[in-house]
Length: 266
View 1 (cartoon, rainbow, N blue to C red):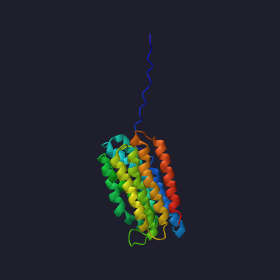
View 2: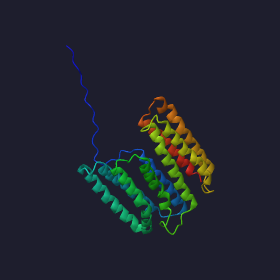
View 3: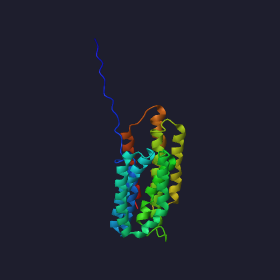
View 4: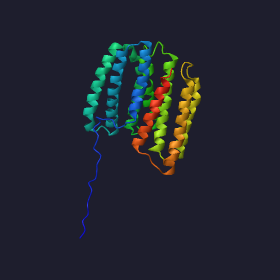
């Protein structure tokens, strides 16, 4: 007589939209703000409004995630408590922020279309598309410019701050390609080639950044990122070896830390 041991099947707990599950987004959310805040301190700008912007930005991300999940689910009511709570909190923080810096409201001309596009793509269940990635990366990369401006017009942002935003966009948008080559599009040589080309162009573009920026260091950073874009998929997915999410996350932490060091070098 034999007995069969049945192991319980682990089921993923349904998300209600309260906790974002896109762990890789945190670096993209925080790093541009941190770089912008460093420039605010250097220029003697108002730090209180910058800190309040961080709070509104992070809570706004929670609201954005809950809303995108609600839209993606075709309006399932279980997401509504998170949507309402985070939307109200974001609204309160936004009003407080604009009471200090009303001129920042002009940036809504750019942010509103980006957020609307991202939410529409979530409703279409294309939130993992390149277009969605580009819109969210663009929004995050604009933060240094917002924090060091008196509004979108009249234009008074220094070329160096614009350069910092450009480099943030180049790195994080390149990361969208890179992560796809080792997770969702692993083993796809076409995606690996596209990832390499996206990183490669920023080596050249680095030399067109403002002269005050460490252009050679930034170009060298993108050389390393280009090598990574080719070498990691070649050592892993293209040879049938998959990397864990933890390993990918550690690698991203290291490269993001290096980006901070490079951009704080001037």
